[in-house]
Length: 307
Image (tube, rainbow, N blue to C red; front, side, top):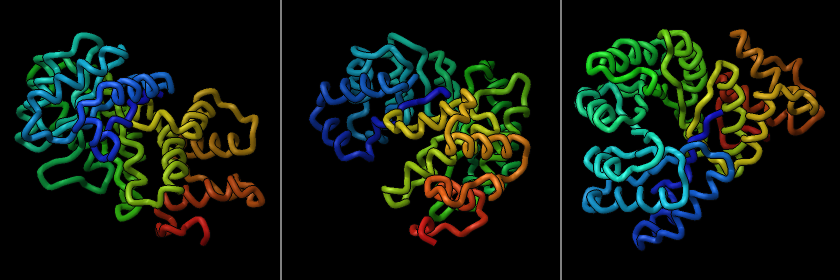
């Protein structure tokens, strides 16, 4: 699994304050710790930075590249800011996060990606928003995103399709469709572009104590349809252990066996079955209840684990 570390994110009060103070040490320590924890790239979500983009984006690149060598992912709607940052990149091939099928962004962002030889995350979202159905998301990739790359001679090998994870709290019906979108995108083009998701989005607005469980169960489900890249928290040890179990097919523990059964059934376009679960094992029951919610079989509520 290729993990793009998510922890330099403007939504964090600590990140917000450190950016305001231009605290190099804070960002350098956070970058190093993420890479040491297994991140293979770092997402830099600095927000739009409408007033200070010209200074902030290059400063962040310079700060982080002093201590790590991994690719930097520029996560912003401010294309001028992204370009200012790209001019400073001196190490690994960077990533722009992101374009979409919205006409203005699809016109401009891929051209910047080509100019600076970056990889490009492209969202399956059009002018009318994010469709629920898997086939509609796939169609955006096949009818808008990939054709635009071919039109400008941008290498499809550098394209990363993001079919968009939405939260189980309020957008529950999207969750199973995302799984099918990833499955289809794996075979929709030859050779297929990479596919990535923002895994933690699935637990946005969920009580803090339940977020890691929902994230890792959804990660296991998505690995069943071949997902190999995600923006995620490299400090989440239980998530990384679930990934390891699937990748190494380690069935040496009861929970590992369940994770593998979930992934294998989804790989076969089947649904996980209660017969796979030891209902006397509280950890397995928590996973099973989470699967049911993510498959939209049981309506999500904040207290779903106690129901």
